Length: 151
Image (cartoon, rainbow, N blue to C red; front, side):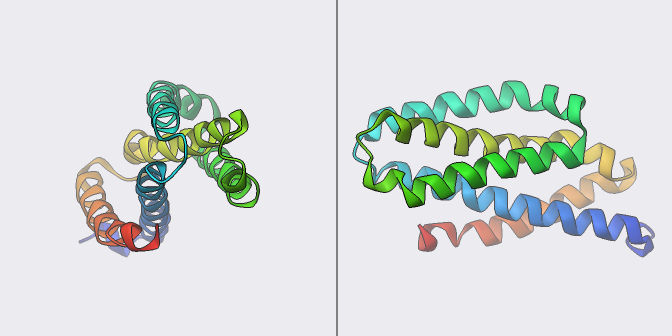
């Protein structure tokens, strides 16, 4: 593989693999945990609404901010939402802010995963892009199988 000899391609492949691994793990972990919350139906509805909004808006935000700032902002929103859920939200599941935190966390992680698909052609040459996406998905599926154990 000629493309794997190029330093930039290797770095992009590593970065996209880490993004996909963490995004996929977080996405499925939130989905598994939604069933354990007190307001299961409200949290599941908030999660679905957040997914829908993320799928609709992530491409526009990617086009506006570019790859680096898009990933940074999405993972930051997911990190902030998840950290507040752990520190405050799990003890206050009956409050409206818990549902808002689910929205923020799920929006960030769903958008990050969606941008992997959208930005993939910008990161890799067209002849290598499909092979790179296959490799990234293989690694993510293997790693995501751990999300059940972690959740």
